[in-house]
Image (tube, rainbow, N blue to C red):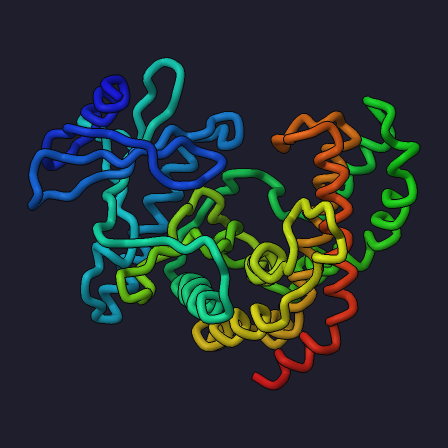
Length: 360
């Protein structure tokens, strides 16, 4: 870890870096906990930024500073205590830059929030707490002083763009997989108009874009030892988007009774207990900012993000597995089938989801 420590020492740390060890379960960036010599001073989180995904590192880091400083301001306005534990703090390099480039990789540092924890399993209780956390996160970004953020991954949750990528992959049929996939391609494309509803409503001025997290998983929340909310983390994809996408992505991942790539499709379906718990928590903190259209479209958001992810898996399968990491040759195909099965379950539960939203 000597090389990692040398990287850490390029940053303006308040005490000498003496140890480094890998931490976290993220799949995008490489993350290390940097321990310092002083028990009174903080430890730090050092990350190697995945430059193949986040190609504009300046924009990425400028967004990060804008987001965290804005949340800090909101907490100060609310008279919150322990503000340094309620949002991330970006540490510059010794020459004042927001990242360090070692000639091959880009690195960044934030303060490690002591005695904080993440959870991997979304029980109904944890789904409720996570719903409150993301609702609060969205509510921070209302008013006339919202920071202007750029898109760190252009068209990340743009359904029209994802469908065009699928059509391009179908046309090219690069690895000869279209014959097998054609029935599902036809099924997905038959729903294209339905699933681009959000973009049409936005174009008509009926659905606002807000600051969205775009990776709403339970392990992107920090809690204290008593499971009280501290802050939302993993802010790389935070950018303008629809709140229904954030809502929907949590339901897609945490509200699935099976696995994202389950080989037994009978296990895949919507967990309504998780849906109700997350929705209740989310509405409690986000309701003041939500329009009636946004509230009504929250269940659609779950279907949209499931459909979008299925389209992305299918597109990558047709292109020869060039984006998502795969563990076996038909992995993206199995992912597609599992997400398609979850979408069917969401369709079947639409009336029940709508009724629960209305009851709140």
